[in-house]
Image 1 (cartoon, one colour):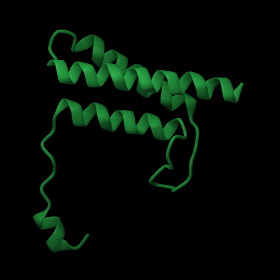
Image 2 (cartoon, rainbow, N blue to C red):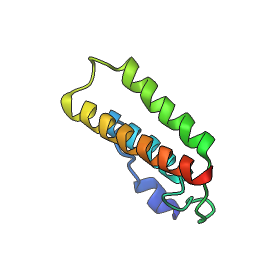
Image 3 (cartoon, rainbow, N blue to C red):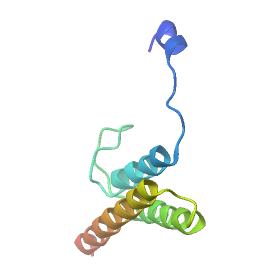
Image 4 (cartoon, rainbow, N blue to C red):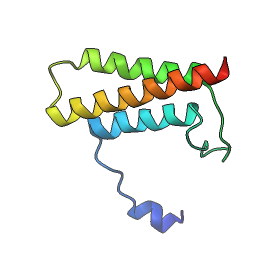
Length: 94
């Protein structure tokens, strides 16, 4: 990115959906579902994936009653998909 591009860059407005989607993406990388952008290699780190999934679970608990229906639904769906992927990957490793 050139200096001019950096000067013109406007970061996205932080919101809950963006935040949990970013965490979900990190969990997906740890589950080996996509290459790590830093190394461009597919790697599995079940401990890291579990930590992120547990973090999302904690956020769900702590934000209960404070999310709108779209945020709540997205969080539930992400957790469902990640937990299933984790269990499947855990079975493969054992």
